[in-house]
Length: 200
DNA sequence: CGTTCGATGCACT
DNA sequence: GTGCATCGAACGT
Image 1 (cartoon, rainbow, N blue to C red):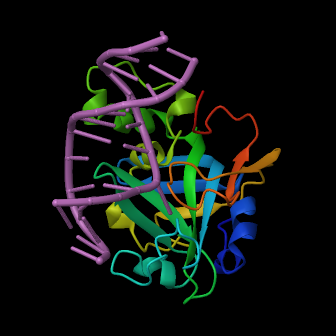
Image 2 (image 1 turned 60 degrees about the vertical axis):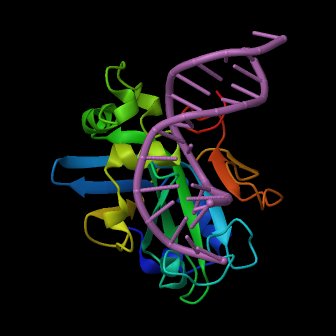
């Protein structure tokens, strides 16, 4: 079952928690890939210094101010695409960053895409549980790019499904990779899952 | 083990 | 011109 818009039009921390165990699906011309979400982070409002909306509306963060249930995709460090699910009512900028998946479908395609990264040429293939470990890696494995910015997650090629997968034990801790806003424990992970990013 | 650092593009000031 | 919601290799203990 595809998650409806009402799933996203709620307090962001609720959406964050409930996204664990849900399945991100992308149907590309090359084939379908899918993975269960095991790591997410919440970015909530202009008062959150780590949120892209912290400095008010701009061209880049416009999707955060729009309706819920859409993708906010942006390029980070000039190299890595990142995908968020926009939450809350329009006008309330907030989103959930999807940081890691447990690969479920299309593993061969994921492996091929990861191998195409310039820094992976001539290297051994990526182990299955690392294919979607980290936000940049998962977007590369799934084929998600800036072209998917603002795409609805409730219909079409890029969707999030409830397949009845139990999230397991959820751990809340500090968001990682940011320089401000680390006080909030707005990172939710499936405890002990091998595909969660961070130190091994 | 640990920490440092380069690659790379673009929105923002 | 600056600074990233990263990744992975290279170096130092």
